[in-house]
Amino acid sequence: MNNIMGYGYMNSGSAWFYSFAMLLMMIVWLVVGVLAAAWLWKQIKK
Image (cartoon, rainbow, N blue to C red; front, side, top):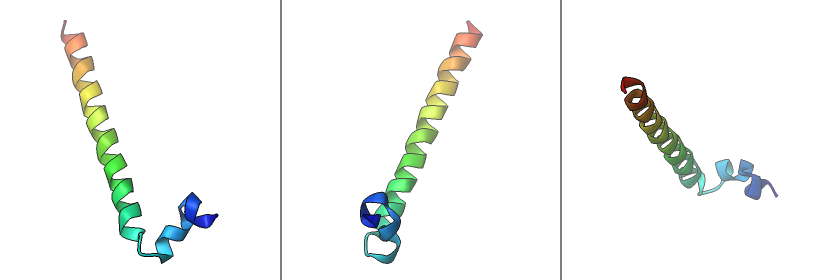
């Protein structure tokens, strides 16, 4: 059950995959935030 929840990844060979997935999610949220800020900036400039 721990493997499904993500706790077991730390002790297995999938630790790099888990950290990579976390990094990917952070990058995705960063891009979304930048796009949203740019869109808001355009709206305000009008």
